[in-house]
Every structure is written in C-alpha cells, then in structure tokens.
Image 1: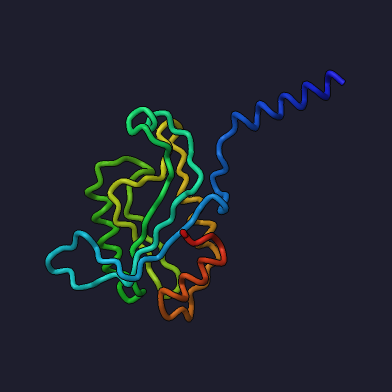
Image 2 (image 1 turned 180 degrees about the horizontal axis):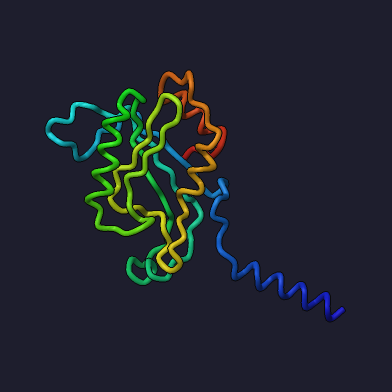
Length: 174
C-alpha cells in the first residue's frame, strides 16, 4: 500500500510540474480576415494579400516575466498574410526584410514563410509572441507544423475554402 501511494504522489507531482502540452490543437483557435489591409506597405508595393490568418492559444501559459511586466496571462499567437503562389518572390522579400530588420533574437524573429500548394503564408512580425521567456520554448511553430503538415489546399479557390479545410483541424475563433 505505501509503495502504491508513493507512486501515485510521484505521478501527481510530475503532472503538476510538467510543461504545458505544446502541440495540443485543442488549445488553439484561428480566424481568417478576408478584408485585411496591411497597416504598413512600401509606397511601390502594389501586391496585396488575399487575407490574414491569426492563430491564438486559448489556454494561457505561465510566464513569470510577462506576469511581472504586463500583469496579465500569456496567450501565444501568430499571424500570417495569405498570398497567391504567383507572389512567392514578393513574399520571400517580405520574409527576408522581417528577419533582417528584427531586433529580436533566435526563435522570436518573425518572417516565417510557408508554401502550401497554391498559397503562400508569410509572417510580417518583427518579433513573435510565441516563445516563453523563461525556457525559450516555442509554442507556435510546433502547432503550425501539425496544422499545415498534411493540409491540401490544391483546388482551393478562395479564403472560404481555405477556412473550411483548416477548420477541420482546429476550432475557428468565435
């Protein structure tokens, strides 16, 4: 009996002290904005995204530094502008510019670029809201890998169809 109790207590302590589930899709939502207009665009930039997709964690993650500075819970999130594949070279320039001029370091640098079939997803963030300050764990990219890994957008003609296909994997923001 005491051995069983010891094992049970050890399991409880381990589960209380463990990291939050990084790649659990049930803690994430997304929304697509088809009316999105970039806030900052170069004067000669006539290429516009077809929309914006935002991914956000719904269950907060303990982050002592953020709690002390901002006095609030931390919800990792990441946004991507969505372009047609024909604009890939333009998206590569956006990505390179974000990475070049970011004042952030390592995993917090934005400019991520993801090519899926007929679409390019590019992050314009100089610094991402994805990495926990204490242990530098990235909470966004593993989730994005799960969402995008086997996503087939071939034949998707518009944002509505992209929305439907991503909606099969994770919840839409209400």
